[in-house]
Length: 350
Ligand code: CP3
Image (cartoon, rainbow, N blue to C red; front, side, top):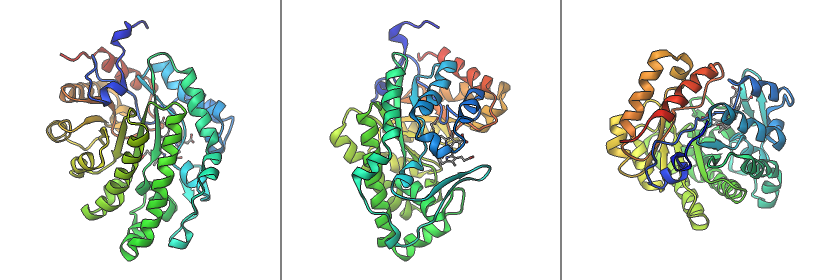
């Protein structure tokens, strides 16, 4: 595929507010189990956490989807749970169940902060960032990422994801100060983790707050907005050129408040966010990313084409990065991803 250099849109420029010829695109979980070549690579290291600490494998996993679909950006191949792991938590990925952690539920159990140990533990992830950066096609930009403090706290307190967040919210109500210590510790760790990825070559960073949709307004301010605001302020101080995308999945009407108060450059929208509302409430204050339904991507066909067109037509008038509302599901046919990538590439802003 040959494209004139000036027509390759830049994710970074779009995030900074400079409209590109068409919206740049990438997909959450663009690497992973829906790709047969990933399944083959994964067989080399069956323990997923160990896989995450093998730069030779993670670099290859991140490059695989680019060879097929030439997205405008790559994302570092890792997992949000390497942060609790590097802080000393016992983290396991159980086949068919998902991630499991030894739960912590008291302030005394909050891990101590040892920056040198943390960075040493995650050295293979940072080696993957710089190694991947060196192998990217010209014009393809690199996204680093971290779980946000609230979502990491959910996994650390509940011991797993996908729960009603009962234990973690109880702790916040019973002993807000003690729980705040865990959030503060995670905030420090996330800042360090993102700083390291930026130093090793990440051009932009995304914060995944997958469980942000479980909270009342008051909790959302305390455990989602405040830590995110601190992370954004710390990164801006040292790396003002690096755009930050926040993904408070399920935040609903709180998306606007999140964008305004945290200072992120862009918000990633889950599939439930109405597009007309995103235009009037969110695109006036920043760039939006999203929000194709991942189940519709798996289903495919004409319904998929129509939804892609609807999203492109609705959001292209403002700052916009085409993406999904949540990660690619394991049983998604790779051809459906190609079908969407071709449609986005063919789109021009008028
Ligand atoms: O987007 C990408 O391509 C980059 C890689 C990436 C992974 N996980 C790889 C992965 C990213 C950005 C993540 C983020 C992540 N991990 C989140 C935030 C986004 C979201 O989905 O809400 C969360 C909550 C996790 C925790 C996690 N890791 C879960 C729930 C699972 C699935 C467990 C299962 O077995 O179904 C994982 C494992 C995981 N992370 C896989 C991949 C490719 C699958 C592991 C495998 O290959 O067996």
